[in-house]
Image (cartoon, rainbow, N blue to C red; front, side, top):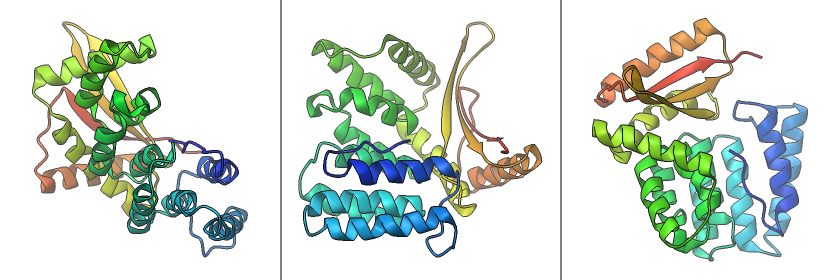
Length: 255
């Protein structure tokens, strides 16, 4: 997911988003590639930004650390930015980068704050909420938003409500989804792969109704099979209960 730019940070965030789109892997800031030279140049601009706007500087520093896969520093930077107040983007970008790092439970916590219709981020945060698996929460916020006459995309509404209905009938909670997705995030980080999940909602009454989070991974079909075996082992170790109504799978998408 792309971070949203704020006026003071738009150029830096745009450059970070460009680097993110260039590779599905976390970047190594110590390598000699052109991408990592750009990464180091961006870091210099972030350091200079601290002299002008600490809140914005912490925000973009958090996004910078997410590019290199450093969860601890990402969390530290965004917490520092959010303590200085809502910049209009820092709370939302915190959730976005939780998702990019495969930290889904943390993304759920972020979404519960920023996705509320009263927070004025409802429409922008729908993709975040759905992407991190907070489907029940998205549906609850959507009901309140409709009462408040806040418009949103009808196609998104249908997808969210179909997914919510399927999972509610199966008794699958947002917390259970987050735990399952967290396991997938653990596997991704182990292989230095940034999260690129694509939720699929299938409604075929009488045949199959289900929600599947498909993680695109930059490997061959055989390597994706190995990742799915690794995922299955992690699911078993974590005590994840499998259910046909909700599944998680890695899908190889080699260049």
